[in-house]
Length: 339
Ligand SMILES: NC(=O)C1=CN([C@@H]2O[C@H](COP(=O)(O)OP(=O)(O)OC[C@H]3O[C@@H](n4cnc5c(N)ncnc54)[C@H](OP(=O)(O)O)[C@@H]3O)[C@@H](O)[C@H]2O)C=CC1
Ligand SMILES: CC(C)(CO)C(=O)C(=O)O
Image (tube, rainbow, N blue to C red):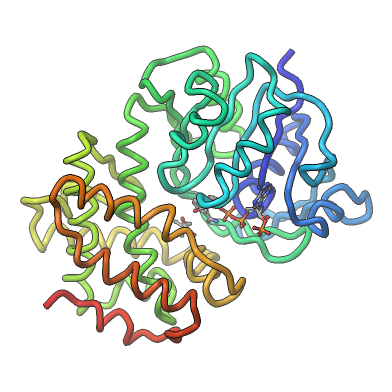
């Protein structure tokens, strides 16, 4: 018997997926460092409410802060921001069953960090692009469906991958498995670079991507990530409108414009209008995942001798926004246009 599923990080992503699994009849235990959020989830009078245009429901489940958790678990869904990966992996390690695994429902290249703590054999990869926002203790917005992809780090098919796939299809019926997880994670880094740029302005994702004057910047940012990915030996995969080949060397302006238009169409109906990075900067007033997501791409670029001027400018602006020396302004994006 696999036992309850442990969701470590019960915010936007962990809360949405965990609640769907509870609703489907699975035993789920939530862990989060936010004591108020934990108290709400475990309170029979409150619980965890999932809100939004797709569904509205409330679940109740055991929830703990990390210090209060007891027991060992075979299936762990790790759903913290990328910069908290190592600390969370170290904290959850004593709670892992010997034959258990951790699956990363995160943006960025978190799997090697997790593997460094729990072991490669106990790490499973995932890529998620659905949209959610943590709104308040016990309250999460599920804003829109998006790609969910699972894969073993060595690309193999395994019994645990198959059973994890069955499990996550209870949340997203179109979830798939892949032998090329790295391709999806690098694809998301390319798309993610565009989302980081959205975060320094006022307009939401669809309105920002739609600004025609910004196409050269989307091409520069996407192009740099795709070039570094290729140097890393990765073949990036597309999803939800993002077409890696349109941004890679050889991709034309018309192809990039078409991919951006497809991303706009995907994001337009979404109830989550702004990226998680934008919310970190201007709503949650906290540091973003920039140093755990974009900085490693620029560093890899330097190792391979690939210049990343567009990423460097963007990373610089995000740092200024984090420090409070740059205000949210749509003009920030025009300032970053390539010369
Ligand atoms: N939200 C979205 O739509 C999408 C997010 N992602 C990715 O998913 C990952 C999770 O993001 P998201 O759910 O939005 O983030 P949230 O901040 O909403 O949720 C993460 C939760 O984990 C808590 N936490 C932080 N450190 C620890 C720890 N050591 N142990 C336990 N809990 C901890 C956080 O608390 P605190 O707030 O105090 O830090 C927070 O409650 C990120 O990598 C993100 O980029 C991917 C696709 C879409
Ligand atoms: C893609 C998106 C916007 C969720 O859809 C995201 O990953 C984020 O909020 O950081």
